[in-house]
Image 1 (cartoon, rainbow, N blue to C red):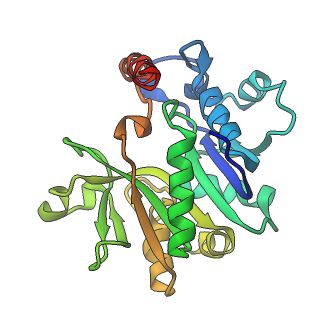
Image 2 (tube, one colour):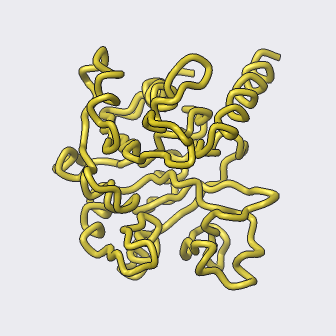
Image 3 (spheres, rainbow, N blue to C red):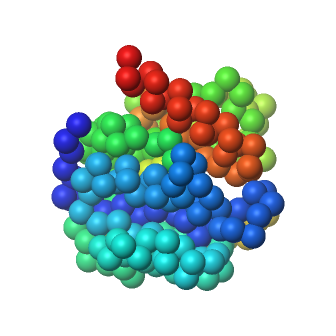
Amino acid sequence: MSLSHPDVAAVVLAAGMGKRMNSDLAKVLHEMAGKPLLAHVVATLDELGVARKVIVIGHQRERVRAAFADRPELEWAVQAEQRGTGHACMMAEPVIAGFLGTVLVVCGDTPLLTARTLHALLERHAAARAQVTVLSMRLEDPTGYGRIVRSADGEGIERIVEEKDASTEVKGLNEVNSGIYAFDHAALSGILSSLTADNSQGEYYLTDTVALLRARGARAAVWCADDARELLGINTLEQLADAERVWLAMRREAAR
């Protein structure tokens, strides 16, 4: 598949420590199928053909940069203190300031993510003429994930509700946030300063941008991925082992 998205800058969130990995190694440097998790994500963005790749790093940042010394075109932003996904995008903003186009926010711990799915997200974003489009997935057990509350017409998204804040009705929804977004850059840069850390974690959540943008009259869309396996992040060594098994299964399926 040959793709090209010269109007897209990708921001990769890769600053976390990954405490649940029970390892001294930064989470995104743990290997799956012989490559660091972050290398899989970068390879997917290569295939997608984005104009720029900005990696937000924090924990062991020099070690992460050194692992990609052969990729001088990669750009780096430092999130010295990890205060949430919204805060990570704030740290990336000076690097992409002035960029005219779409900002694709992806996670550095999703090695199964494919360019085909990201392309579909960008196509949906463009077709909806949205200022933000959320990539979602449906899970049999959505426990722990932020739920997607769609707008009345079923096409857009009203808000993302974190599980701890969700009513019984909202907890019954099985469409969840993947943590991957497409933003009109002007809309994103204009809303980041409105984020607050007034929550139990004291963090700036990128999920809050959806409701904030809607309150300003912006369009917020959602696209549900066909294969939820691609969007599962790695938080533990067990999940890492599971991801490698899924990676092998997906390769076998693609070869049929």
